[in-house]
Amino acid sequence: MRPLTIAACLTLGLFAAPAGAQDAAPAAGDPARGHQLTYTCVGCHGIAGYKNAYPNYHVPKIGGQSQTYLVNALVEYRRGTRSHPTMQAQAQGFSDQDIADIAAFLSGLQ
Ligand code: HEC
Image 1 (tube, rainbow, N blue to C red):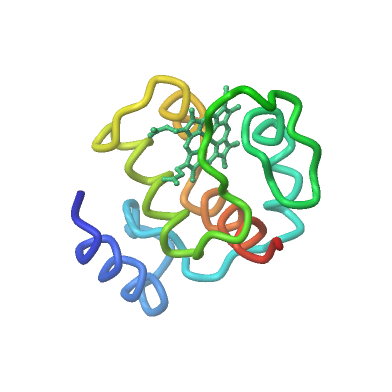
Image 2: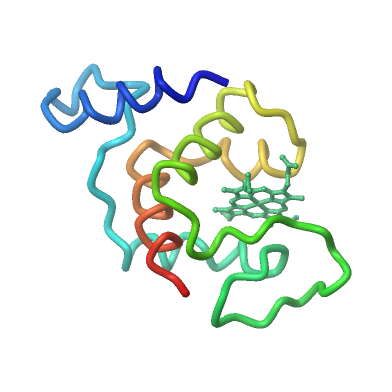
């Protein structure tokens, strides 16, 4: 885990052109789009305002988390630097923009 590197990438993402900024997630996310992307997450994660379909399933709460934390976690799952088969599978299909949108939505909950 290199939170500082990722934070630096996020900051640079504000100024860098979208092309070539492969690893840097865009700083601004669209919460409405993020909402649509998180429908599949709800079954496992007890997001505030949602019913947790699996009360006995131990999963971290992601609603209301800081945006930076959520982006870092998802980017790390996608890269494989944070290891968890389920979440790596989830994050695999996300673009940087998807992750930014998801983080924008989830961090606004609660
Ligand atoms: C099949 C169940 C399942 C689904 C579906 C799922 N997750 Fe997870 N998620 C988990 C588990 C279990 C963990 C804890 C993994 C670990 O220990 O690293 C986790 C961890 C996370 C974390 C890290 C939280 C932390 O506190 O560090 C984030 C962020 C996250 N998930 C986001 C999502 C998003 C966004 C989606 C939907 C696109 C999603 N998850 C879908 C089970 C799931």
